[in-house]
Length: 459
Image 1 (cartoon, rainbow, N blue to C red):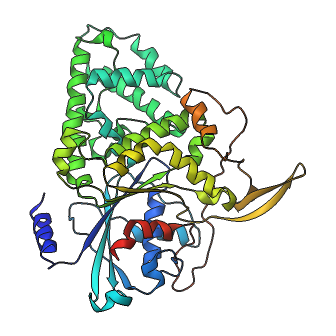
Image 2: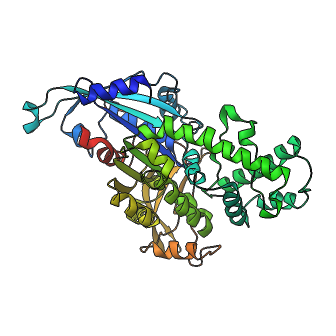
Image 3: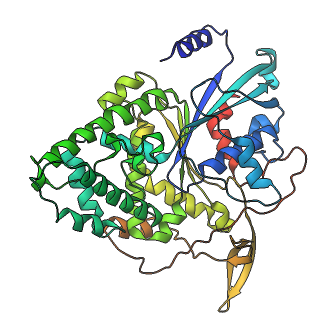
């Protein structure tokens, strides 16, 4: 831990420093991390749309403002640019998360009622840390050998987009040939192309996470390896890929958890459940497994090396949020929440047992649609209307989610390749043009409830 962190912890322990809440925001690709953070901050600065956050509704929060984040070596989250993209005259979606970033929002809080006489005005700092969920999935690599990871990955690849090209390429490799760097690079490129195709098709488990988001490490040996079959064990290529796999864990994964993850107090995990359902049963089951792996990161004691990093520290509250709730009529929001809850049931129970409070919620950080009833084949269907990416207006009914989540999760777990009784569709809506009234943040669905769960008790 840096000296400034140690000093800050000591001062807070003595009551000499302002309280700090470190909120981690992550999720898998296209879950909406950038939009979530932008809208959350905007709605904490202008709290007119936050009645579900009690400290905003009763006036406890007197003021809010941005200031420089405490970590000088971490890039600042580009809040102003992202907000302009979402709410400007030509609204569009901002670029997604590609690296760790941070933003500090400070709140001046004056408790009301009985607490007003016991605690005066104080400043509470909310440090929001944005990081790719693909990196968090790398936790599962830490307790696996290269042989174990290769066997699991090669088995999982069967039938996934882009896998056949890589698997076919394995057959043409001379297992006893000398290591040639161009061959290693071609194999890595082929495997990475498979990961990208699988992600685009709705699959969640696309490890190693840095292969898709390499940043400044692109092309480095620690990111130049791929899974190999056991029949190649003992070959020069296998030995070198095993060495690089171990280097990836020790020099990439471990520092990320040490420098960023281990300091988080509260956590949001965003999930594009609707996108996975649209992609089919295999994508849903893959997401369920991936989310269980993510949650394992919040259970100190499960993995020895992580427990050593965290010590007795643990994340206190974890919110799992099914995003894009505005793509459904509100009549289906409870079903979406129930599906997410069921997907995470086993993993959530373990986290609850360890003392972390968890909650599942369907939300839309930025509402892009309005609701209406459309008539089709003599039926009245609850639909949403919005602006498509090409500028056209459209009313959309995505299909009816089941009352019982098991109707989705059971065929997914059993290996079904398609839904037998339903067809679920998704539509990509653009941000809706809007004129914000003074004191109001961007429109949303249940963002205030999310904030209440995550930080309400500290305000």
